[in-house]
Amino acid sequence: MPNSSSVSEFLLLALADTRQLQLLHFWLLLGIYLAALLGNGLISTAVACDHRLHTPMYFFLLNLALLDLGCISTTLPKAMANALWHTRHISYAGCAAQLFFFFFLFSAEYSLLTIMSYDRYVAICKPLHYGTLLGSRACATMAAAAWSTGVLNSLLHTASTFSLPLCQGNAINQFFCEIPHILKLSCSDAYLREIWILGVSASLASGCFVFILFSYVQIFRAVLRIPSEQGRHKAFSTCLPHLAVVTLFLSTAFFATLRPPSLSSQALDLTMAVLYSVVPPTLNPLIYSMRNQELKDAVRKVISWTHFSRDKLLICLYK
Image (cartoon, rainbow, N blue to C red; front, side):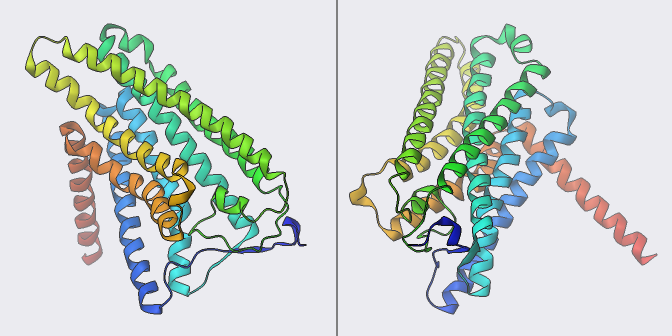
């Protein structure tokens, strides 16, 4: 039986059987990818360039946008290339790299969303201590901790997964390299080790979920004690985007990983993978900018500056 060292490449799931549908999937994925790049790129640029947005909340939002850019860039380009060139192949090293970066960015994003719930908790429940508890050094440390947690978690899972002997072929029933589908190719009881590691990660994820839930319980209690309706509305408006992003992120990820085996099918697995890997990075910029006037104004400035620079460049070229 061949082991992992004899597998030089994997075969990803084909999104369609006919050439016409493959091209349709390519253009659809390209549109989604460009929308995610544009939205997250505009938010990153706006936060970095507008000094009014140099606050803890927007600093964490900048990190979230960068993580979303990396997360969607890990999966969609390869899926688009396979659809365009009518192939399913991904190299062994490419699969390992894709799994590592996706799990790293996904884990770091979950850690960052947990930190962002703490930011909202301090802003609403302890506003007088906001500058002390969330100074520039503290924010940088927490962001670095989120990224580092993602790296360590991903290193552990990637090393464990690709150390397993593989004897069930090399076909992965997913459009990107995903741990559960690679484990199905294993022919060794050592896959129990990876399941144990997944259990530890699930426990940590549950701890983050409890922390987020506790933060919002305290936030809602504090908001409901605000006497004025305008004050309550303003407080809620600063929390609703983050709460919507967390709900979207957790609902898709939890259903994809915790649904019962009886609901498992190739079509449903593919749909769930698209929901948790593609939808959040695409919709997050829209969710955050929908009710945030400061962010809208900063994005408009970036767009107007881009148009001005383009027009100035065209004038110089024509001269």
